[in-house]
Structures are given as C-alpha cells and as structure tokens.
Amino acid sequence: MATPVESTTTAKDPKGFSGLDESQLEKSLIRRGLATAAEIEACKSRRTHMAAKEPVKEGTPSKSLLEIMVESKVLTRSQMVRLLQEAGGGEASKKFQIPGYQVIGKIGKGSMGVVYKAKQMSVDRVVAIKILLDSLAQNREFIKRFEREAKIAARLSHNNIVNAIDAGEVDGHYFFVMEYVEGETIKDRLDKNKTFDEKECLRIVTAVAEALKHAHSRGLIHRDVKPENIILTHDGNVKLADLGLARITDDEKWGLSEAGMAIGTPYYISPEQVRGQTNIDIRADIYSLGATLYHMVTGRVPYGGETPNDVMRKHVDPKVNIVPPDHLNTSLSAGLGMVVETMMAKNREQRYQTPDDLILDLKCLMRDESPMIAGQKPESLEALAEGDSDDTEYAAPRGRAATEDEMVEMASYVNNRNLIIATMATILAVSLVTNVLFVVGH
Image (cartoon, rainbow, N blue to C red; front, side, top):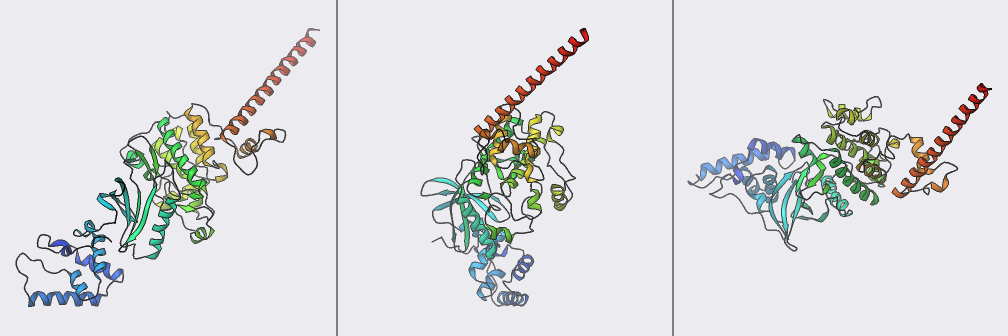
C-alpha cells in the first residue's frame, strides 16, 4: 500500500491548506460539481463561527476552508488531497508514493500528466513516472486514454523508442513508468537557435524512421511526430517519445470515434489528419517527420499562420506549397530537398509509402548519392516497384514493398538499360551522319 498522505496543517507550515486562493478554489469546486455555492457559503460561515467561539492560539494556524468542508462531510479527505496536489499546495504531492519506486524529483508537466524522475528499487535503476493529473483522473475517458497509452507503449520494444516498464493505479492516482532518457529534444535545440547540419539531420531522421518502421510492424501509428517528441540522448542516440496520440492502425471502431477530428500538432500535422479521415496510416507519420526535418534544416516551420486553423488549412490546400528547403538553406543538397518534398506530398499516394522506402533514400543521401525514390512521378514509382511487362524478373512480389537489395538491383538494371539505349542511339546517329556524308561526297 502507498504511504498515506498526512495532514500538512502544522505550526511550521500554516499554508499547507490555507495557502490556496479561496476565490479560485470556490470556482473550481463549483465547476467540477464537488460542492454547491450554498454548501461553500455554509462552510465559510461555520469557520467564522468557530473562530469567534474558539480564538486561535498564537502560533497555531486556523483551519482552512477545505478542512471545514471535510469536517462538514461536503468533501472527502481524498478529494481534498487531490485538490491540493492539483493546485500545487503544501507537501501533499511529495508525500505520495508508488510502491517499489522512490520519487527523486519533478521533470516536467504536460497536458495530461506530471512526469517525475524516480528510482525503481527492485533493480536499482532510474526511471520516469508519468502521473495522470488529478483533475483528469475524475473523468473516465481520460483514464482510458492514459491507460491506452501505456498499453500501446508496451507493444513496442526498440532502441529508438522510449520503452514502457510498468503501469497501474494507487489510491486513485494513475501512473505509467517508462525508460528514463537523459538528453534534450530537437525542440530544445531549435528554441536555442542551434542549427543542424545535413549529415546530423539524416542520422536523426533515419533513427526516427527506424522507430516508425518498428511501430508500423506492430500495427501502430504515432500521430504526433514533432521536434518536441524526439529526444537526442547524451550518448548520441535518438528516441521517439510520447505515445499519447498513438493509435492501432486497423482499429476501425477507434477510427470512427474520432472521425472528423483533427488530431495532431498544427505545424506538423498531415493533411489527412487535418481532414479527420478515419483511415490514417503510417504515411501520416512520414509527413509529420518530413515537416520536422524541414524545421530542422531551415529553422522555420513549413507553414506559418496567425491561428492553428490557418496553419492546418495550408497543409491541406493544394494551391499552397512549401518553399523548397534547399532554397531557404542553400548549403543543403538538392537531394535532401527532394526527400523532404516527397515526405510532405499533400497527396499521400505521392509520398514514401513505407518507412523502408524513406530509409532507402536517406541512406543514399548519407552516401552522397542521389535519392532513388524521391522526385519520381507516381507512374515512374509504380514501374520501378512492379517492373515493366518485359522486366518482370526484376519486380518485387506483389503484396509487399521491394527490399533495399531489390530496389538497388532494379535501379542498377534500369540504369544499365538506359545506358545501352543511349549507346545504340549514338551509334545510329554516327551511322546516319556517315551515310549522309557519303551521299553528299558522290
């Protein structure tokens, strides 16, 4: 069992309960349906009456409104503790413990939870614990979403993904334990105006693409790939984090429940997510990774706007195109510009169809070679992937994407064939000129 939260109303800490802004507290109580205005006024009157009847001794704090409400059975003690934790009052949050873990300190706070650094006592290792905000723990839908994030994370095990360790609930507190990663996010770097050179970007994006490949193989899509969710570790590794919006690809019921909802981050969201389509797949993550790569190499987001709606509209509008990244940053190779534009094609049929395809082109760029897939027209890609009618021996079997070796073999074959055609054309041209000169000479 967790160590119970003790009262923090002591002479040494008189603000344990009374330090909260009562006007804000009253609004919160009424808004959340924990008490009516009449009940609050009755408790305030009782406090005034008690203070008049039994004057507080010097050095002893008066009872707070929350304590009076608990004594009056308007609130339970657990509700009082949750209110204190939510407001950050007193030492209540520091007293809460999860069996088997020792909390070291707070790392940060997100829209759904607070993340703490902790030690897993059984194996003596440092972990990160995400605790669902108490205000959200009152809503079953948020609890389901939080638990779903933990279960989805548990399906993944990859060196480029922040891995799940444990999850559970203690005294109404929902927690999710994950791998602790030391480092900074890409957003941290961008916020400091730090730049990324092309080779570094290729290394980072390849690692994220490998993470997406693993997720794809497990039937998952991330749906929120962005600079804030990519961690650069101190030892040089890359980790994709935050599966809060991840979804099982073939879960039709889940997809229908979100139909018409634009789920994602406006600056990096794919067009199909903006439209609220239900049949979202891995190509949406490839688009978001492309938008992230664009930001990394240019220092600015692909589409700006005064409001989130303005930004999302530009992602969808076929008449609005991104400025090629190699036009903004002239030190970039033309090949990288082609890769980014292919990743961010508004029509997903013109994007990379799988992470494998993207990884193939990224590896080409790392070898200072031109990308094999980017920049090709859809019909050219189809011919390259399936083979022409007289080249079927070079086509990948139907129903799966070509492997890297097959793609290399196909590209080599096409290049050799083109060379032969060009050579024959040259021979014919020389022959024609020779014949003409022969006729003129006679």
